[in-house]
Length: 92
Image (cartoon, rainbow, N blue to C red):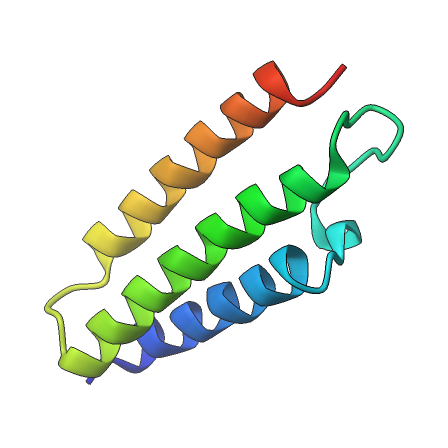
């Protein structure tokens, strides 16, 4: 069991829930409500991605996956791709 993976996974999972389900998009850094075309879709997309990444990291931490670095690097890559997609398709 890796404590750092469990903590990071829980943080991602809770943020995913708050952004995706509770629609607390103010938690997104740099979120400008006037520039986004579909606020609900943005919340579902970002919240869903954070929830899935959090669940993967939480399960990997509970199962005792070796180093946390590959999971964190993968999460950063997914989030960067998500930022590029949102800025290209959802922002005016």
